[in-house]
Structures are given as structure tokens and as C-alpha cells.
Length: 93
Image (cartoon, rainbow, N blue to C red; front, side, top):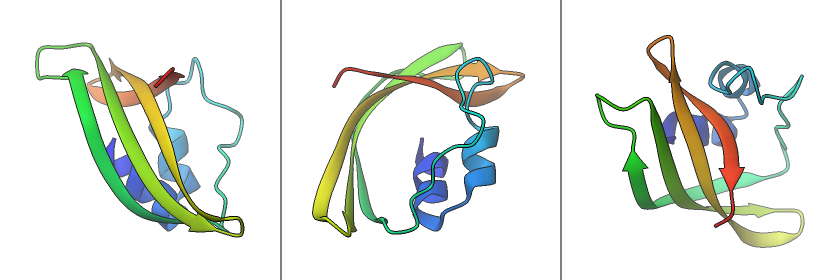
């Protein structure tokens, strides 16, 4: 989760692509160069431990951009694939 936030903050689309589960990832992840990500707050984590195959992270990511300041509040599902965690999808926050 934190590495994906950092990739969005630094506009590293290749890392976002590589950490997105192939079953759900778009052809090209959208990276908005006009958005500056300013903070990440983890609200809760379920699963995602060393013996788990899935996990869920609820977070709030703060940003500024052409339309002012904002927050992204999301619940993200992850799955372990070939030993690495991949983003699967967003659930309702």
C-alpha cells in the first residue's frame, strides 16, 4: 500500500502497473501529474500478514491539485501473487 502511494506521489506509473493484479489492472494506469499527494493515513488493516493470501487496507490520501485540496478515502483489496502483494480492487469506504 505504501509503495503504491509513493509511486502515485512520484508519478511512477511502471510501479503502479507492476503492483496491480493482472486480472483487474487497466491497460495503462492513470497518473495525474497535476495532483500532488501530500499525506497518507492508514485507517485500518485486515489480513495481509505473513500467512495470509489476501488483505484489505482502508486509507485516506491527501492531495492538492488544480481544483484545490482533497482527500481520497478508499478501502483497497490486495492479494498475494507469486509471493508479492498486488492491488486487486477498491471496495466502498
